[in-house]
Length: 419
Image (cartoon, rainbow, N blue to C red; front, side, top):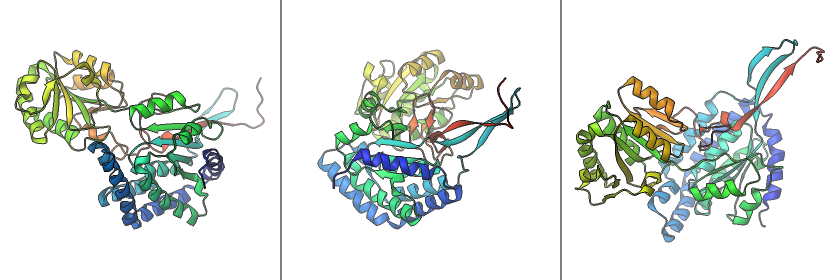
């Protein structure tokens, strides 16, 4: 039987009405049971993931993309733990805020409510299937998940875990719909269903984001690429700087919170760049260096003069751009010109510089003396994230359950009429 996205969206809309009134206890029980089911089905999930990995290798998929695709015992346990963390968080639906009595005598408050139906479009990373489903359920939303063809077997194995639990709790499985067909026409139709789907969240490469943003008739919360910078100030602790840079660039290169550019204040370049060069050589990092810094990387096999394109590049690999800047203002100007609104880091012991960086840099996450790798929903207390929004409307930065809600005004009166 062929998959009909229009029918699926209508079913999701119907399911969302039930989800919106589920009790917090019921939702949290469902989430904990999903975590348990994922753990129980680990062998089946890994078997499905191996099919996707084999296909990726036949297609000569890049190593960074294969890393995003990989599910092993450790990553599956992390997925299950994230779901439990989401379940343990305070309930967001029904929360009342800003209660005040107006001159007319009416009482006015705002109540947090679900958005309705979330359309999630993503590539490669199958953990998003569980993370997005769990966050949407926590926030009382139905969700339609359209993953990429490269992760189809993995996504469907995870969907079986979710649906088994929903059915066991007598919850409509249409609350979490995983599209089983990667046909592009299904995606294009999905983007027109504004009566059924309330918001679209694309998460993936720049091409996917632009396609969705241009084609969608539904509001889009963009999750663009991560061109993340580390600025090493003249007042930096050099040991801290080296450690933060190493972690941000080399711990896991395939993710959007890895560093892509390091900026070094000219006054400390001679002290720290030789150390950075040794560290990059150890990790076999490819360096694209400015003219002033290229000489420090002569011992590296792969060090080239940076071009204009390198300053805006998201490498997602053991690759980085390096630039010496004359002063703090030049560093800020470079970041403001080339950043993608994701995550920026300053390493400095000077409180005034730290304060100025935080105030001047308008990215979703700003770090002071900490690795960019902390730009993650789990690390920032959200349990997991549906993505990191680089839009400034509605949500900005890692989006947890609260970011998947909206607010309505509630007015309390006792026969009040307007004069």
